Length: 253
Ligand SMILES: Nc1nc2c(ncn2[C@@H]2O[C@H](COP(=O)(O)OP(=O)(O)OP(=O)(O)O)[C@@H](O)[C@H]2O)c(=O)[nH]1
Image (cartoon, rainbow, N blue to C red; front, side):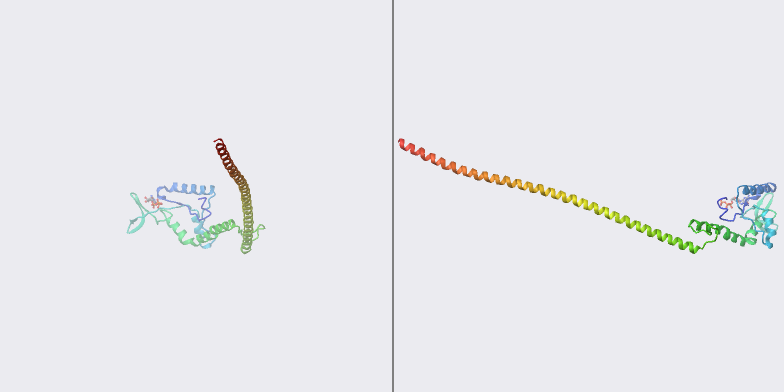
C-alpha cells in the first residue's frame, strides 16, 4: 500500500464482511484505520469542501474502511429477487445498507465522487508522476531560487548542451582516429624499413657469394690451363724419350 498510495486513490475495504460480527467489525475498522495512520499510508478521503456533498462525504469518511459483501447469486426475498447470500438463518442482501456498505461504496465511487476521484488522479498522482519524470530528465518545475522556470528555456539549454557534447565527442573521436592512423603509419614505415634492411643484407651476402664463386671459377680455369700445359709438356717429353731409346737400340745393333 505504501508503494501505491502516491500513484492511485486508495479506498480501503473489508471483504467478506458477513464473516465477522458487528462488534468485531467496528473494532476491525478502527484497527485498520489506526494501522494505516501509524504506517503513514495515505488513503483517499472523500472531499468535504463542497457544500452539496460535504455532509455525506464527512460521514462516509467516518465509515472507512467500507465493509462489503459480494455474491454472484440472486436470492428470493419476499416477492423480489435480490443479490445476496443465502444462509440457513437468513439472507444477506448485498444492496441492503443495513447489511453491508456495498451501496454506500457504489454511490461514493460512481455517483458522488467520480469527478473528484478523476481530478485527484490527475492533479495529484499524474502531476506527481509527471514532475518526477521531468525532474529525472533534468526539467525541474522551479529553479534554485524557487521561481518557476521556462520549459522552453531548459529544453533549449539542454539541446545546446547535448549538441556541444556531441561536437566534443566527435572531435575526440577524430583526434583518436588521427592518432591511430599516425601510429599505424609509423608501424608500417618501421616494418618497411626492417624489410628493406633485410633485403639489403641478403643482397650483400648474395654479392659476396657470387664474387667468391667467380674467384673459385677463375682459379679452377687457371688450374685447368696449367694441367693442359703440363700434359702437353709431358707428352712431348715422352715422345723425346721414346725417340732417344730407339736410337740407342739401333746403335747397339
Ligand atoms: N462469505 C463470503 N464469501 C464470499 C464473499 N465474496 C466472495 N466470497 C466467496 O469467496 C470465494 C472467492 O470469491 P471470488 O469472487 O472468486 O473472489 P476473488 O477475489 O475474485 O478471488 P480470485 O478470483 O481468486 O482473485 C468464493 O467462494 C465466493 O463465494 C463474501 O462477501 N462473503
